[in-house]
Length: 357
Image (tube, rainbow, N blue to C red; front, side):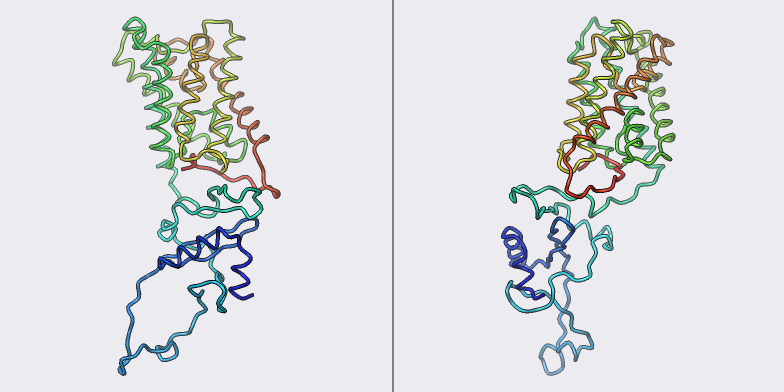
């Protein structure tokens, strides 16, 4: 197949992008996937031109090199194939960094003007389990400290924070932690989320015990730090239902369902919002606390209840906050997996370490 035939097989938008990049001196080519075409920008190393003794440029045969087929500067000119033998997954990570905003344009999309980002072609660099656990510990510590400090301040200063302040403390804490540590550990911060992702094969089961241990230990450490700062007002940070156990269980189930529905969308679906994942999840936490805070405390997280309960010595109805969020997380994540948009050919489940960037 000639270059002219290959160019004609692509859509007009692809050709325009190709010509624009070539006009600026950038080497680029098309990578044809199963259902999409990926426009790849290849890093151009600057090569010094060597001249022969006669003062003219040596031919490839004279320079001792083998001529290679390269794409011409303009489409429609006979020549070698545009893209031969180069695999994206064979590139080093330093080479992949030249394509941070690469877009994957679906050939079969009904509306060609709606690109979506490809995240499966260029995997993120591996992170050691030690670094993941360290980031998870720090993130969970910050979350529990901030989310629990609001109710404690309310108790100490006669409702100075109010319900909106408590919701903002937790929601903003979640947002900044996701944006700062999500690319390292995934910013789970919640055993229910970790279990739900593992059940749906988005997270390896072998790492679940270590993640939960980091989350529980961080929660207990943050709670005792709060006790040292605000003693004797630690009881205000414990989530205790003000309604019947059945009503509290239902509230915790539904708000955790809502949280994991959103988290699964932004963390596992390439069509959902990615760069704003922290804002979306933080806003969901704020909304859930505004709805359920006065009734059940709006925990959504077993370690949000466990750590303060240990520090305050108050275990009243603690089973609600251990069981309901876990069940709600499993159902919420599973529900989004069932209703999410799918391609014609289903992709295999993939493990995700972090919220999409």
